[in-house]
Amino acid sequence: MLGDNERGGNDIILETAGLTKSFGPIEVLHGINLAVRAGEIHAVIGENGAGKSTLMRLLAGNLKPSGGDLRIDGEAVSFANPAEAEAKGIVLVHQEILLAPDLTVAQNIFLGRELRRGLAVNDRVMNAEAHKAVLELGADIDPETTVARLSIAKRQLVQIARVLLTPHRVVIFDEPTASLTPVETDALLKVMRAIRDRGVAVLFISHRLNEVKEIADTVTVLRDGHKVASHAAAELEPSDMARLMVGRDVSKLYPDRKHDDTGEAVLEISDFTVPGYATNASFKLRKGKSSVLRALWAPGAPSLWRAFWASGLGAAPCGSRARQCISRRRLRPCAPGSFI
Ligand SMILES: Nc1ncnc2c1ncn2[C@@H]1O[C@H](COP(=O)(O)OP(=O)(O)OP(=O)(O)O)[C@@H](O)[C@H]1O
Ligand SMILES: [Mg+2]
Image (cartoon, rainbow, N blue to C red; front, top):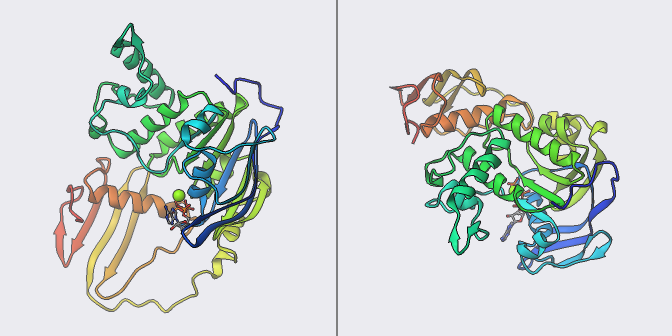
């Protein structure tokens, strides 16, 4: 595998200079200068719409830049498609799930590069290799299961396994942990460290700033398509990261408002607990009001929403308990689809 060199060189593998991207008349990335080194985990953070995925797609040949340069090992390159980027060792785990739902886990992992014995596809070996690849990510997924039967988290792990079986020098993870449980996240972070320690450059997007603090060596911040900072992770606390992302002190982001508890509660959540996600959370949504969960980086906030929606879609881990009322009608805790 490319990238099997020892960690420690810290040479710049991938570099951009003045990279821009426009969609039609609108420029969404403005003159990005980025240097990604061998053997580092380089986090790219920013608010929704800051341009993180667009930048990653430019690096991986999914999009063509509108201007500026992309260099690998100091040499200018341009990619007509993702295959050309892969040939240079740049691979991308997309934010979206891009698997064929009707094919099995193994068929997806080897799609387009099937292992053969003579002319026939060698399912036995592909199944064994696919199983090994997902086990390395801490997941025991039957390689013969069709992808349509898997949870979103498991599909994401299959997608990661597929990418990691491609020879690579730069691996880009676009929000890989967004759908994962804490246990799956820990396993993936371990894998990312192991990849980094082989001298591979890891680009990592996450909104979980504590996770970024824990794993990243370097943090680059995008805001409205501009690169606003690039620092050693050791120099930044999550609160600094949030401030750089939004461009001001986040404690002043939402001015204090008088609490308004008038209006009929159309949705009431009380004592909502999903082990590993939320503990005794309670809130009410009132008719005619909009509600915002005021925490950009608070550890509980994303977990609460994930637990909430997982429960609503019937995918919450059992053991969750909640009292959910819609217009005073009490709902059964953990009832599939009870919110929709
Ligand atoms: N194909 C496209 N056509 C037009 N505009 C696009 C396209 N892709 C992205 N954009 C716009 O470019 C900007 C950056 O989007 P991008 O998806 O890169 O943000 P992001 O930082 O990855 O956000 P998120 O955290 O929500 O994933 C946004 O304003 C988005 O609407
Ligand atoms: Mg994105």
